[in-house]
Amino acid sequence: VQLQACGGGLVQAGGSLRLSCAASGRTLSRLNVAWFRQPPGKEREFVAGFRWNDRRTYVADSVKGRFTFSRDSDKNTLTLQMNNLKPEDTAVYYCAADGSTILSDFRRGDAYYYWGQGTLVTVSS
Image (cartoon, rainbow, N blue to C red; front, top):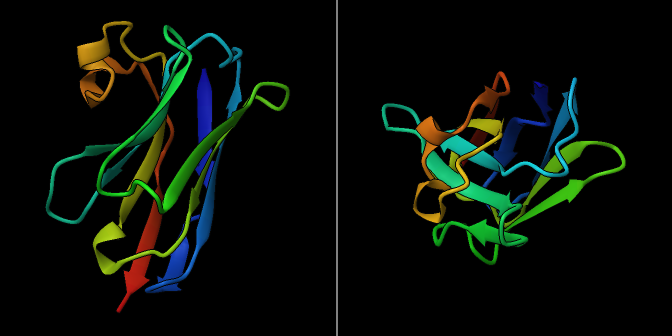
């Protein structure tokens, strides 16, 4: 699977951005998929994702109510709608696919096999 993320940019606090991740080479429809981010100088962290095993969408507490994860099986894409952005959301955002089928590992980046190249989101105060 090749993943191509886009949509990052510079936005003021309170603004919105929409990230997209296009997949090729394999359908994402039966894979665990997610968005991760890595803030400057910090470790990568889980943002939101869909777990095929239980058909549920998971969202990190830090972005719950502001970010919305979606996937389009027909277009083979993932989307992360980010509203009410805060300076602490500044990070490189990555889409990932083929995550672990084990629930406790779903939010672990090292449990994903395929990664996009990352797109930078900068939120100014």
